[in-house]
Length: 393
Image (cartoon, rainbow, N blue to C red; front, top):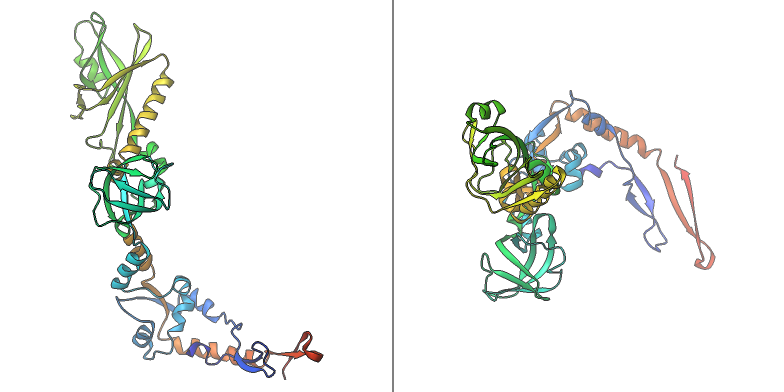
């Protein structure tokens, strides 16, 4: 390699050899390129094209293939992780590194489908061997052990007859590795509840004669509700729970809940799993259908109920909810992103490359005259050894 061409030689003993061998002193480190790396007048950037090799880039920039080694000393990422792969190599690497199959489920995988155990599809009869579980993403990583394929929506049974429901299947390299928020930052899916659940104050009309709430309309402001109230009606405040996306809009086909304080009964009345509430401008459509109601004596109990209900709903429907507020990044996309970060190469400007190389070699040659000679001598009868270091003249 041309990088080591001018490095000093030292006497080095390999194993039990009696005579030393002249060997390149790899401990020599020249910091001139570190100085160049921080000097904006001495470097520029080069965008590596698909399939470019280091020697080709060196030739394109400097008219010689000899200076490719400077790229590794100027770019920490390349020195640590290697030269960027071509597009074909990126795909091959992802498929090799993430070669298993993945089942996505809405079921809890915590204490079931243990690593190294087999499982089967109740309908398809297909079988698989568990390789790993990613609990935060509800992913079961497995290898197929049968020719039959698992069927979407079927029940899967592990060795202890624990059941999960299969939602979908994909190759591991196409499975979700993580989620990112709008800023492109890794998102902790365990904190999804706080970011996706919206709690809003709304207003209903309460009929004091019938002691019932009118759920046909839910108002965004108290003034709108006051303008709409009729005989024997008064405006009362309610708390509305919804799932919202990054734009603040409700995520379609997801649950809604609300509670209000019933003064006559001195309790908090809850309507939950509401399915027919939609926004219609400043005045919203009302509640026409809901699954159930509950009552609590304190507001905190009502709030805790919805915290639990929505948290459970998100967990069970994670792969429906998460894409509405986050961007999924697959394993293949992650490998590609890591590779793409290395495509912009910091390089020494062609106008100063010869000066830098001359200075680099000059420092190495000056170092050679000061390098110690390492001599290792064997004691009598080959028992023990000692090392002495003397400066060469």
